[in-house]
Every structure is written in C-alpha cells, then in structure tokens.
Image (cartoon, rainbow, N blue to C red; front, side, top):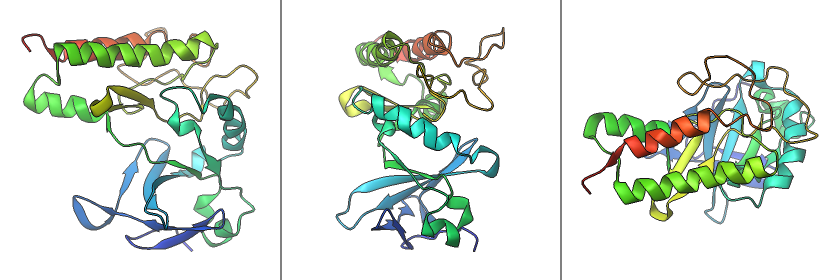
Length: 232
C-alpha cells in the first residue's frame, strides 16, 4: 500500500496511536514539508502533544539512519539539538509491512519556529528581519550552539538556511537534519556532503570532519547580522 496520509488519518508507531495533522493554511492537506532527502509530517498523540515523522526518499533510506540514532543519543541534552531525541522505525516493524516507505523513518519532537530560509524569504519582501540587538543575541546563540559542538569535536556538516530553525520568542537556535552529523566513532555516510550551495566552500571539500561547520556557520551568522535593522 502506498503511503499517502490525509489529515485525521491514524497510525500506530512504537505501540502508540498518532494522528496526522491538517496544514493550518491548506484545509484538507496534511501538515507536511518536503526537503531534499525526506518528507516531514506533523503528528499528535492522544495527549495532544506534537511530534514529527520524517519519511526518507528511496535513495536516502538505509541502515545508516539507525547507526546515526545510536550516536545522536550522546547529543540529546545539548542546547539546539532537540532533534537528536528520536526513534527509528526498523524495517521489521509491522507498519513497514503495510507501508514500505516507512522503513527507517525517524520519529522525533516537532520543533516549533521558523527556518532561516523562511526568515530570508520574508525579509526579501519586508526588509530587515530583526532589530539590531535581537539579531546580535540570535547570532550569539547560533554561534554558541556550533561552538558547543566543535568543543566536543562534533560538526553538523550541512549548516544551511533550511537546516537551522530559530525560535524568536526565546532567541533560541535548533539544528535540523542530524542524520549526517560528524561524531567521533560514527560511521561515515555513504555520500558525505560538501555542503549546500550558498553555504559551501569554493574548495568543494567534504565537510564530514570535526571542523566541518567553520565555513557555513560564519556565513549564516553574517546573514543574521546583515538582516538586522541598525536603526532599531
């Protein structure tokens, strides 16, 4: 059976029932987002708590995702790494027998906020995204998040506008797409990234290394400051 959920459809994962949510701006359409490697769906449990189900596209669907989950457990308590708290649907799970696309799907918290890509698009229409001091605080939090990682010889490896989400109410940073994080002892991805265009060093070297965020991180940090309103 093809996996094509609709709003209010239910699914059982890890012996719990969850309901697919409707997109707030598109009645009748599930709340989902498409990235380069996966589709992300919003679910709610019986208590009304919001969760995320990340369903990988065929070329990105493999056992490396389980290996990354094991290593990401070490990062669960780091600021900005809420997405490290996750469970992977094994290919032997009953739900995969019904929907083969759910093999290696990742279940994790739904992280509220706006991606930097969304903020950039809004700034293109409206101008400055933040008052100066707000931009400085947000930039500091973002850089501190990366500094905490590098201090442990860890790197996200693909810092980009779509992989960073900001929670403006508390000036907080969250990093998304953690499957290929560089962690000492982790298995190297089959296709390690060289970064995302606009955040990619011209040398085109693989970023799966302890200092893999040193180019893309400062680029995004400079964007935060450049989009501030210096008169505010």
